[in-house]
View 1: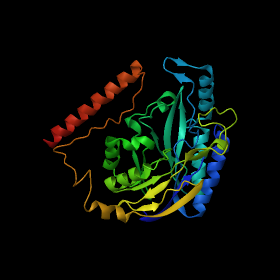
View 2 (view 1 turned 90 degrees about the vertical axis):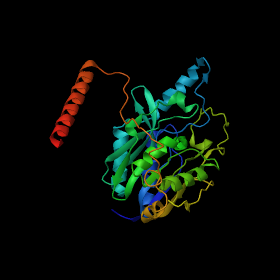
View 3 (view 1 turned 30 degrees about the horizontal axis):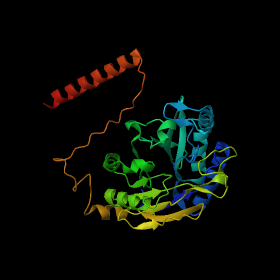
View 4 (view 1 turned 60 degrees about the vertical axis):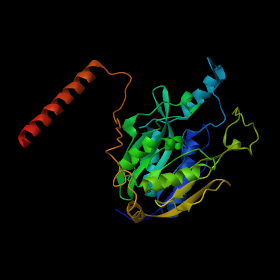
Length: 334
């Protein structure tokens, strides 16, 4: 496992509602980051599929408009299936550039969209998928809710990688669940471009003694197609999401300062030995915890709205077999 490597945050916009062109742009940006020596490349929230800031999808309390339904249809058609052809293409991009690739996507599953983060290895394989647990405000109208089955950290040659998306980072219990899995490279794809985002990322880095890598979109009205009826108006120069990507080390030092001037790629040197140096005096799920006072229980089971009888019978049988095996093992040890 490598202790030192380079990580990149990509601050850019998709080609809104044009997924093939967005993926082509992502391929070029990944190539550019890899040519600068990056082994880990992190893209913003909803980079593939888009974050249509300023749209209201025709929703008012008690009613939805036909135009809003058309907006949702266009958004749905821009989303991707996981697994699917577009996800496979993202894996190919990771493989051809020999990088670990973290990408925010809008995932389509049945009739529901999810804001997800995909992590690919340099071999092109999908290592993990995280669905945003808690969409914020009007996001709840167009995105479904994730469940505990995608709260995970994956072990890689450059460290343990996990993703927490945008305002999920304000959920203390979710952060704790990530820390408990030994996260080292805490990826925070976002569209939050406020000045308050950086102190949040510094807090998480210090609290979790991990590197925080946060990529934010830089989106202007010009990145959206005609007919994009955003509340901000039609001036192509209007900035809808202003960036602010950053990288912070486990002691809270800022390795990549936020920049709000446009699209860019920023690189930082990562030294994983700083993690252990930081945990010398603070490990919130180890020596600095108080399990006699506080306890967190995390349900990592997938939640399906429909379970067919045969599935239920199989699950019950599996649980019965597992309980019997546990009892036999205990009897042997006794």
